[in-house]
Image 1 (cartoon, one colour):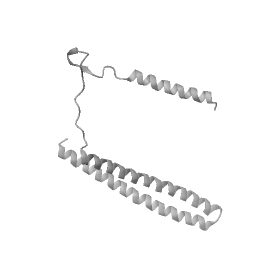
Image 2: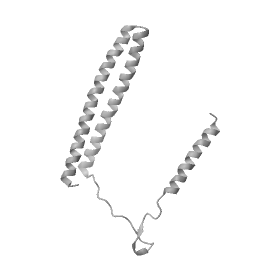
Image 3: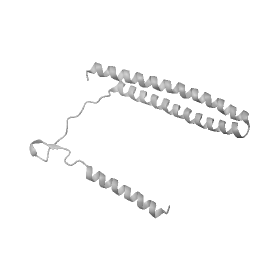
Image 4: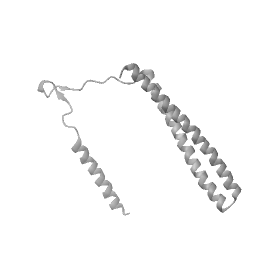
Length: 139
């Protein structure tokens, strides 16, 4: 693809996004007190939902779930590659090497199963804890 066409396409998308942003921007975001334009009245500040230790616990919990999901994806990708390689080698060339790769794929699938159960348990515990906090707060 010629560079001029690529640059033109990118410029058109950027211009469209800019005009969409300008067209949908909020006008008059502040209400004025008594019609006086010099004193804008901001909406009342909402109280923070996270506090000190709660914020640290939420960040830690999110990181833990994120790492578990990333390891689950890594095990799944590894298993897919091992199955593809194992089947190919079993059919075409040294069958013993294909068998070894398929055995490793079974181990990787066991890792996927274990990580999946851990992620599921973490998400269920998170859901129960948040529901309990909502019941305590009365929301």
